Length: 75
Image 1 (cartoon, rainbow, N blue to C red):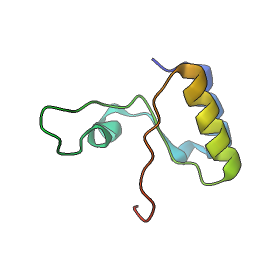
Image 2 (image 1 turned 90 degrees about the vertical axis):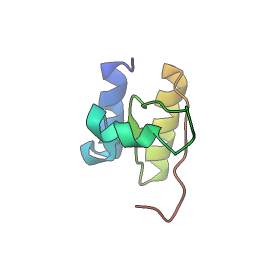
Image 3 (image 1 turned 120 degrees about the horizontal axis):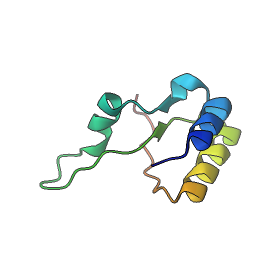
């Protein structure tokens, strides 16, 4: 489970609207139509700046979280 202090850091650096933690919002992010393979992330972060990317990478590294980039041109 991701630490509350790490979530707060992400929210400070990325903005609250760019850090998704609600289970119902994360559910669709763990599914890609691969048979028998699914999961749900603990958090989804959408950085909009280089500093935001750095913060997200630092939190992921400190928390031991995998990083799955989202393709450009979506959303």
